[in-house]
Image (cartoon, rainbow over all chains, first blue to last red; front, side):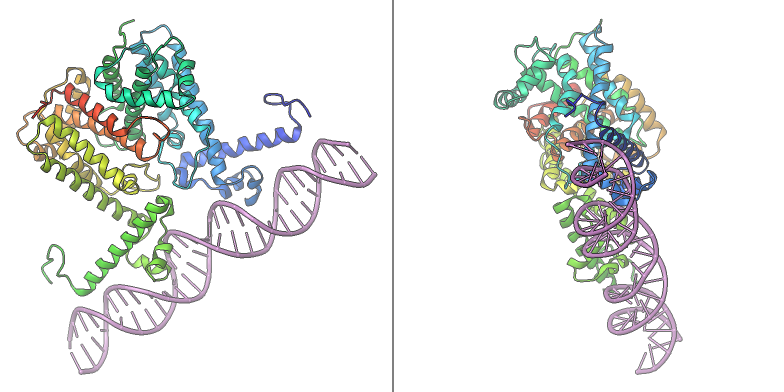
Length: 242
Length: 242
DNA sequence: TAGATTTGGTTAGAGGCTGTAGCTATAGTG
DNA sequence: CACTATAGCTACAGCCTCTAACCAAATCTA
């Protein structure tokens, strides 16, 4: 009956419930930070919260549900970090902005590796991501699309363009997504293709770094990221300087 | 007393033991293929082999030990696949060879995604990789180093070169590794840096593909790989044609 | 060949987990 | 004030890993 105010101002019961859910997620993140996803235990969380075992099932249907909530939160937080970086560099050159966005992505990952791995790590085979995950991922990549839309076509990427074009024309929602972040762009294909490239490059570097695969090797992942994003910027002709 | 023949010809007991270990690993791979790493269960394997529970602990100290064995085998198999591709393309141009190696890497991953994720997926936080893992990974990358050593320096990569140079001079074994795969090369730094780049790019593309992150997007990962490896070949000036 | 030893296999069980069933008590609701 | 929804509980079924204690057969040794 209370006309669903956007956030608080629900019934006290609902507010209590929401608060406990927050505490559960908090404890869950602490567990994951300490021992990885596989250490996430409904039982153990309940104990740290002072309640016993099955009580938590009143708040999350099961372990996967809790995981899903954590992942959703993570995407939102990551998207926010990227957005912030985009705003903070609004007056810089496109090339600089691309590097800044990529570093924001990496910095977010390094600041909370466990949370990053929740999003970008190997998903459990049993786990089925909810449908809205696509939207969340698009929100993270949106600012990249916006910046890369300022570049031009990359001749060598022609085969990729063909595939991306089929995708954007054949799949509802994709064109709207691009339009939302790069409204001035007439042809979304080059920007979208470049964004996929940026995503793959960032994922490669950052996930290797976060997983510890670079340990014992002499290079800095930030240097790698600079080089790769710079090369991409050059390839699509993003204006430098600023 | 029998002068440790390289493989078989041990005592019958040892041969039996080795055979059971093989069967265990076989069953383990089947489990992982069906349900991911988290589905790997010593107990369940024992049952499929007709023995009961704790018997398997006579063959593998614990779950992590079994996992380690699977990972070791995986590295060997992957290295073999790359080596084969290298041999099969011995007469082609360096550029073509780089693409062929990258596709061999991807093909191996796609043919047995569960095994690939064992090597490249997010490692469990509790799991400690044995020391020889580094050697295995170097064996996989070796052929890439060999091909990329035929290229020249890439000016934009200068900052990376500095870091890699410090690594190769400061870490015993690295120079030897490079020398083993690219004996003619005087300065290993550009080849090594390019190999790191190739690794990161391949990992980004292939792991996203195998994890299913490209699902619903219109591009083919093979196209992406062609583009990225081609761009790298161009950057380091690998000769084309042939 | 006979005894000693190693080793593969067994069952029992401790301790952990997920998730369900069924109960009680209490906080909101009409 | 009566009623209902719900937060919490205990008990339990059914998995899991891994240890302990024991048995029997294969192998080694004297």
